[in-house]
Image (cartoon, helix red, strand yellow):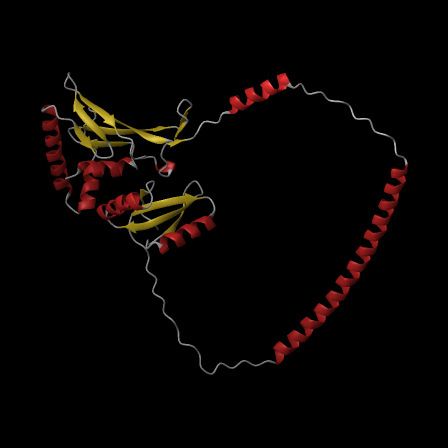
Length: 312
């Protein structure tokens, strides 16, 4: 049983996932940050850690496995126990264990479990699958120094401008203003006349149209047969997210493009941040969903991610 896959699913939704008689994987929200030296932007994420002291079974992991595999709760607990025994034996033999999309476990000299998290997946759903990004540096200081060096060689001087008084221009301006006012008043009178004429013509046309409607008789000899439409509601709680957009028209374009590529794409509504979400498809079980996710990340969109949610 690939226990790490079930743990990975739960880390999207919960801050603590306990593996009975082994330890707990904890998540803590980390804010976005920028590394000025490398010009790298790191989006907000969930930092993963491991605590060997927390081993009491809270039922979360076992219930999830039982629900996914359609098996009794007791059998799910037995599977977890067998996997834990296998992991502990490998650690005792000084072998490091890599849990896919989670991290690497090993034993130190004191016999304590050490954990090194992986960063391939961003478990913070609010980050919408964003990954780190590197931006080229902006060389502002270089241009500033070049300008300063030019100013030292070629000083700039400003000579005040002298203007001559031209009184005849004032009289011309007054004349233009008077002509403009008279033209405005004349155009306003003409517009009012046109609007009055249009209103009278519109009322006459409406009266004739109403009279014709009252005289008309409509007879339908052969009524069209009723059409029954069968609408299928999409099912499944595993949704592969293609993106989230502030403008809904952008969603419609993405949905059209994805459908043209053969995906069963659609909009699944607005999240709590007011963004319209678009999915490639929805699935009923986890195996099909993550198999499709791996294929989409490989061939279409490396930033796609899975939303586990039951839609109304």
